[in-house]
Length: 109
Image (cartoon, rainbow, N blue to C red; front, side, top):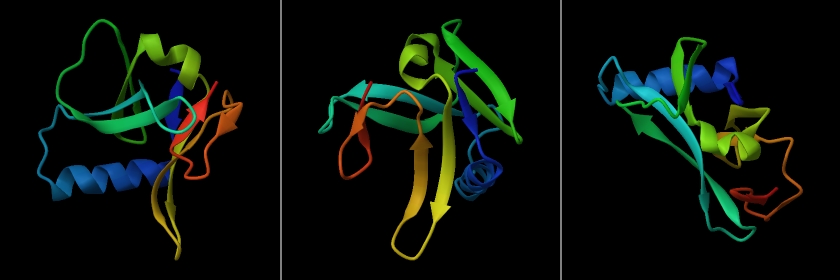
């Protein structure tokens, strides 16, 4: 699997799934889309369907799905959850990034 989750991120995902009463077949879908200051931005959302193009794995009790076409952009990426005074949310630690913008939500590989 090209992407993994920290235990802290997985716990936050599980909390959101319960809070939003999402179905049992829900997966966390991680992807890449064009745009942002540096060329690409991450996409993160819930889905109930997967296809043969997806790599699906369970990590810390969360089913994670990534379309294989994103492997070159996301290989080795770790999704974490940051909960600090100045900000909170999911962060992507991607070893392939050669440039990112100041907001941290777009990148270039």
